[in-house]
Image (cartoon, rainbow, N blue to C red; front, side, top):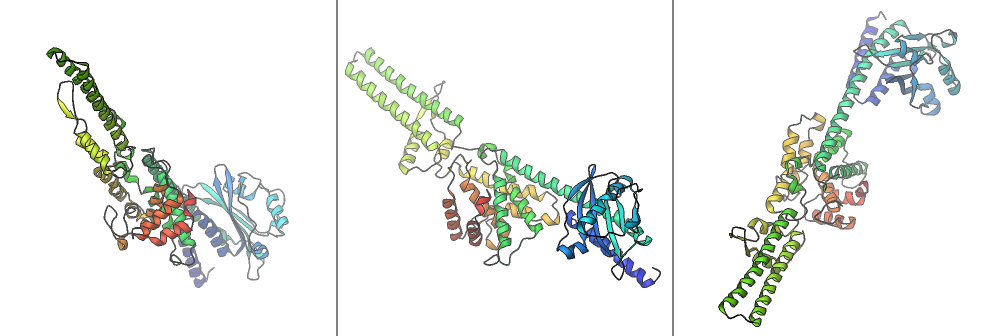
Length: 508
């Protein structure tokens, strides 16, 4: 190792290993990288890695060139082993002692650790392990977080040789560096899981504000990801050259979960609206009609009394008053029935609208004798809503949820991998022809991911079983509506066909 060119080569190699360890954040790939790099550096035929989990070691990675050449793959099954002296890895994790065995065959039975597991594995696999190096992996807190094992360092002729002392020293150093990388990877993974949990629970909490939208974000997310997976599988057609990376898939999934988070800014009364007017409001209106009926009966009694006082009372005149009163109370009852009917979402004709407008002009007197219309202008506006159960102002309030979504999500410091979530989530109600909201964006300004969410959101809303203002539509009717919207230039036609032909709906 005295030659300067060899030293430069070694330093370069160590630097490249350090870069490899620090740049990989996926724990699975990181563990594979650690074993692969250490094997390459020490020219080891095999290697494995164990990670400490609670009071046991988890056997995570096994690599072996001899077995791979023989079987095509390394026969490996992840398992947990105790941290004790019954195995080399368990002993190293327990004591923190490094083990360097030049020749396994020369080792007797008086070791503080057992070799039976290793020898049994060699026997089953028809292997011959000669040299072995087992090194504890210590993190920055000097805690042992795992063990790396290397088997059979090979010379230029492919024969097993002992691990040199300089190899042991460098492997120990790299093992500690790897331990830090593993801890960082686990920390990053934990942070991501925490963030994803906050995202999903926040979305579920928003949905749960109304029993009529509970589960909506979950179902939309499933539909969105099923579409994205179908896009990635496409080998022909409009999506053959489109592929969403793992990072893009995760970003899209988060956006789908968060697409309605702005509903936190919408009043629960509007979210929960079943009919056009609340039950309390209808009860109040019904009491007004009761007063009108009472007034009609009271006026009839006054008229009869006037006949008696004036000496003109007769059975015929009394019967006429009764018939007029009965007709009046019947009209009042019919008008109230019309109010109750039109309070439910659904179509109605111009004659019913005209009757309601006339009925609204009826008056009643309160306890102080002051006259009032039986329907306030606000009542009439709600009852004359032609589609659904929302007035224009209430519909505007519902639509404002996308602005709230953008305002909320823009304040979250998303990482670069998730930076587009606010934009994707806040444009899922935009239509390709510019008729959507809130920005009336046209096709060229609407992200591809937002188009995916739009198709899923509309389908879920059409087929949802928990919407009180409408029955769920069957799948065939819902996809017909999607196709019609695509034909009108509102939805992405290619995505609609992918949704239908790919049976995306089966995900919910």
